Image (cartoon, rainbow, N blue to C red):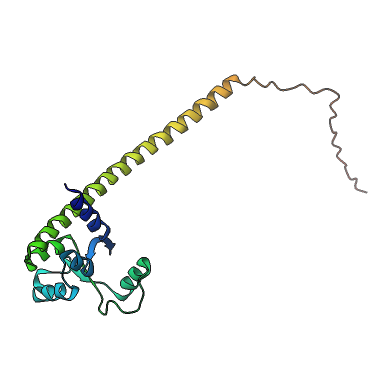
Length: 183
């Protein structure tokens, strides 16, 4: 892979966000990659709305958009007048059938490679996390066993304590009972 190609993959990777628990790309980022205006991309999508069900594309809520602006430090002046659209991996793939330029095809190929790469990374992390959890459980049980062994050794090494004999006199208390007489 050429250096410019890997750079563009990194550029694409940085534009993938997680919103509503899904990996998505915003319409403005996609339009920059496709080298078209955002309104053109959204017009093409609206002309083919049946190709973009809610699991392929959704519009951000005001809160989600405000949160994004806060995260990226975007000013509230100017800029987007409408809430942006977020495209899932399937939505991005569907864009290649709506945008028919050669650039759109090439960009989609690169985006799909990035999504696959991210899936592989996440899969690897899940496997690693599982192995670490198993190792942690083994270590915990080993720690408990080692502690029990040390306690047993300490008990064996400790001298047996014999009861000490008391020195001196032992005073026993006498109990007196008083009888009352009847007169």
